[in-house]
Length: 440
Image (cartoon, rainbow, N blue to C red):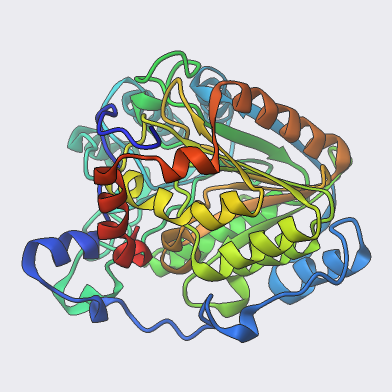
């Protein structure tokens, strides 16, 4: 069966506005009218004109859509909490001048306590520490962590003395869906981390059981770190913080490796900072293969069409999503409704079986990789602030492709016949949730 009603707690839950809709009968107009191209707009269609290895693709991604692509970077892949958290904590503990840290999820638990202690110790030692925690994602934090950090001198993003990013306020209800989903840690302006991991015990371990999620994070050095820092500064200013500049935050960065990379900021208010547009451009440039790891796979009609067109010109497309261990019942109910046309087009969809699959990695033609906080859903494409690290390198992308293949071995391939024969009640749930997919 494609769907299961069983999955481990805690759960992601439905979006804020969908929760209010179901509880109070409020309608979709609460969502702000974002002044950008709709994904269904025919002007949003991108035809295949060049490959991801071409100069044209680099110019489009590096000039039309995002920041400059920078040479001379090193990016290390960190699989699961056993490797991710020690690397992040080691960097924090070694900080000499500054730490900037932005996260969506920050919950109580062993990992939350360790990060609070590490950040507090460096602040007490005179390091300038700035922290952004999303209001919705930080709902389960222990208040003592906040008091500990504040007492040690950590500067938390404060909006009218509320230590959260975009706390709910009735006068700004239309903006409540705009969350920071970015995961950014920058130490001394020289070492950067991004990926899919939040600060919670569910990310510990090595994906060995349903209580230990599968995820990937990345450690970067080189000139691209300044772009990750810039993404943090954007939201720090938006939260009412001061402008962060100077050598503490933006030191001179020399080459540390051979990768060309850019940190791509996604924002609902900027049409040319639209992560979906970047993804669609990459899909249109694919000539051989697309491998997508997506924790929440809820593509809109335009993106489905783009994937179908790529499959039609001979591109092998493989997608890994969570199986029964998915922390959002509403995504679990709604996502498979969208799979039929993709499966008919030859797209291979896998469901990861051992635990919750929380990775967010796109690999095109074993050359272009986009990795970070962005899910393949409307929340990431149109509502959240996101950040992705784009890497243009065959060796790095081949490594990501190999990791994808290992994950696929631990996953179940869903065929078109499987999809058609799923139980009637699952089909009913698919289509019941389908009208609300903009909010998933």
